[in-house]
Image (cartoon, rainbow, N blue to C red):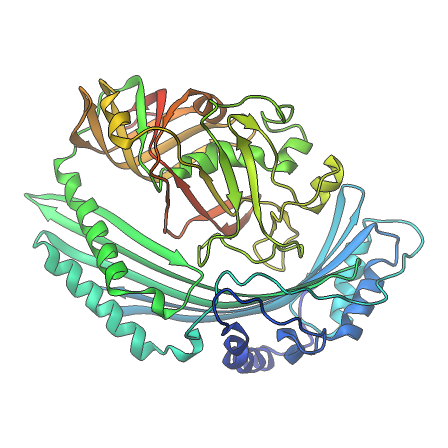
Length: 513
């Protein structure tokens, strides 16, 4: 592994700041139009000295010991964050990240090195580190590079560099005032606002040259309320690959309303009885259970290694015929959207479960070669410091044949889970424990009392088999979900229609898996 030492921190920040001023000139694009194909010398990273000669020499070093495949992954990111607490700014941060990672693949083994210095010397050093995985004669690199137009799923109308603190702070102050004014029991408000301008470039030994410009923004509002000596806290957040115009009055009003109302309802909430019972998962953020307890088990690396319970289930029933699950990167401006994955593959739509039958895994290049299929555009990484692996993008269940009201009316005694806050999952077997922050008792087919301090405990594959009703009201949640795996975090989206699970173990306060 190599680290930057040739470029001083002052030089790095100065160069990156200058680049930040021009980054979004490339990001500005009319909706729905593909960016023009760029020559290797004219892309975003040309300002950092990245050209065909530099890349070709780096790949030659990476292939010097006979690897089957090599790639160079460049990344540049400028991030800003503001935190408002008690009506005043208590954090204001800007960070700049720049570097490259070199990967060499030999069979199903990976060698990796990275550097924060984009000079030829440092890139070749990283390439030598990665090449150590192989031991054979050198292989030739690509004679020419080809760049293809990418989809444009997150065009910006207003560049983040054009949005100063003088525009962000009034927005946060208004949200703070609106949250406090919504109910006198609200005593404290915290707001966090982030924006990000990113760029990646992937060039590989097959001659593919893929560059993507990736914006991101997040808004998080939490509040603390007091009532008769009791205190409750809850929150709401939104995220998107979008610009400042994403924050419409309607969307901002929803953030305040949801954060405050989810907090206040906790004063009325009870702890439900424990035991096995039907559980109805609300449309939207309940998709976290689908993502964690089921989706990870469909990532191909876990199946290739025989870890996942789905390792021998392709082509076999895993759910009822009205259950279809997809993972896709195509949702316009979605947090989990990507034009291209971190291996240079166009991100499309992958059907994982089709009418109850397991149809596919989520593949990166390595697993696709193992299974002799095409990559699904799911090779993702946290940054240039990590190699890619199969990861979800936006994972959800398609609408089914039932109605929400019909599903609730079918339950005599159970719970309705509307919002989850966290959980633990054993990916191989799919065993899980999830904490339900908000929900309701279902009694005689009706939502009655709100509930809190609830754990649901079960096994993901078994829960999938027990899904016996699916409504037609799919909601893709707009929250700032981040998926962790093997020490890497990536942004994702998720969703679900209203779903009934025939039985799940429900535990109250203090229950454990």
